[in-house]
Image 1 (cartoon, rainbow, N blue to C red):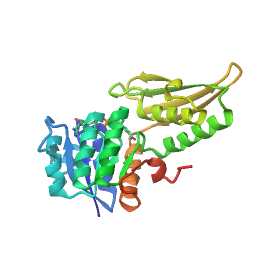
Image 2 (image 1 turned 90 degrees about the horizontal axis):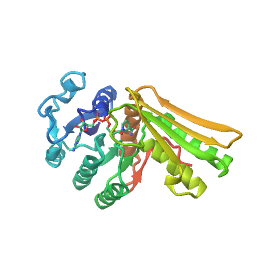
Image 3 (image 1 turned 180 degrees about the vertical axis):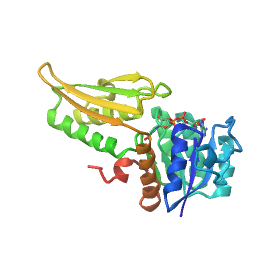
Length: 259
Ligand SMILES: NC(=O)c1ccc[n+]([C@@H]2O[C@H](COP(=O)([O-])OP(=O)(O)OC[C@H]3O[C@@H](n4cnc5c(N)ncnc54)[C@H](O)[C@@H]3O)[C@@H](O)[C@H]2O)c1
């Protein structure tokens, strides 16, 4: 049985992760945290997620070290916010607990801080701005298309998300820009990203390659957040069974898509 701790358990993604965990025969929720000031502290994580009492109480993130020591999870799953996530990864690393991080919006310094902690603790880690299978295939399609079209095309990325999203551009758009920039030998900021925040849009990404004569568009639309939660379940299983200690891997490794 894979023992899982969920950070951000009261959030949109955290609640879905708790619900998905209940459907897995080989996983068990053993701990759940949210922001230190969460008004939900002491409430049952299962009840909050709408799946009935699970006997796991929501605890403030300031008590994470203590909680990890008591509940002994194999994996900590984090869908919170960038600054919180860095702290949670450091605490997990000190406790020797593997991590699956879906949070986005990290600065280069925050990313380096997490990588350093993962190396020091020699823990296994998956960090991915988008856990859906489709988006990871989309990344490879974008790479191949850039390679085939070449640098004569102007590139633009348009991403659309719900109004509650904190970071812009999205982690997925930034990753697509990195892929194109690497392929073209450009710096990442040469790829223009347009961010739209509208209604309750789950997540849409369009990469456009164009010249005055033609236009190629590659589009991914997430229809439901379940796709990210389902991907997170794959990441949990992978990190336990095949994760490499001390290095950061991503969904390309989990899904066997790394080219
Ligand atoms: N990788 C993916 O596939 C994927 C998919 C969707 C969203 N995301 C990202 O996941 C993150 C969360 O998204 P969301 O829509 O669930 O946001 P949300 O705001 O609904 O949930 C975040 C939760 O984290 C909690 N939190 C804040 N500080 C915390 C801390 N120190 N410890 C524990 N919990 C803390 C908040 O109180 C909140 O309940 C965002 O960065 C988002 O971009 C990633």
